[in-house]
Length: 370
Image (cartoon, rainbow, N blue to C red; front, side, top):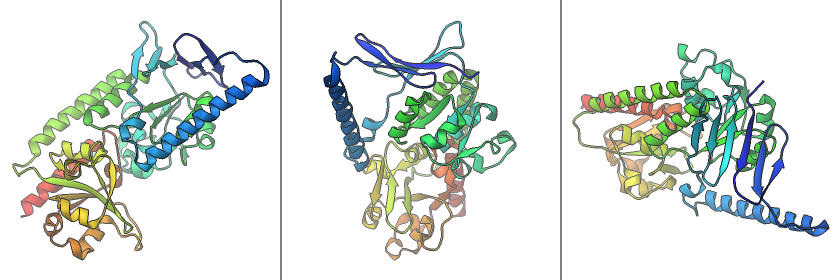
């Protein structure tokens, strides 16, 4: 039998709404009404709330709100003393309670596959996103990942794709369809939403949260300590060169985009001893950038995705080297456009450290060639 869990929100003047499955969610009590008036007021409240939520997400995706507004706060996770129970509490009083450790975990995107594959055996995972074969550690097969490739796959984060696997815990990030998250919670599925990392400390925090939530604290600590040793070793390998200015850039022929502050690329560059020129220019998050903007930034090194593509949308590196207007840029002239494999270029997990190691190796190789 899987773990039982419940969601509660503390406070006075509350009443509970019960859903299918093992969950109960406690919400603020609405004023007493009778007959049709009560129903009308309740529906009005629901419609108004839905409209506000819709407006919020419309503004979020339009870029009118900063990323930090949409991101959830970090929850506090505590083990109940003397038991296997764990409570995950969000600011505002919402609490997720597990009586026993989850045994059918479902990672909602490829980054969660990165995290879970260093913490758990595949037997505790019920399914993987189809994108994990290209965008996670699974892209590089090795003995450590034995059994992970055999897990069933689901395509897209949706109720119809998640529910058939009967997960007892689903892990997602805030950018993933909030309407689906709400629907799954309504079906009694435990959903944990964590913030996207802005700094390496956030990645360690994610590992610690998962360690407690999944009752693998020692394993999480081991992974964190091993990563810290790798960071020390990486910094020793940094050459005595000046600190280079780097830019994460993508352009498949229809326009360019860059990664500023508070992005996974910013974490990658910090680990590799590089300065993020987009962040230095005041950009936050992922932003479009035309060729004139690219020329103004004139980075020392440009990091791109090595993703394969057809002739209609040439890879970013090929585009950069072929563009006549960019010939005099430092990175183009010195052939410092470095392609990282897709699972490292796109990740927001601890695999960014592997990406930084590859990036430093390539930079040192280019430096030695001069």
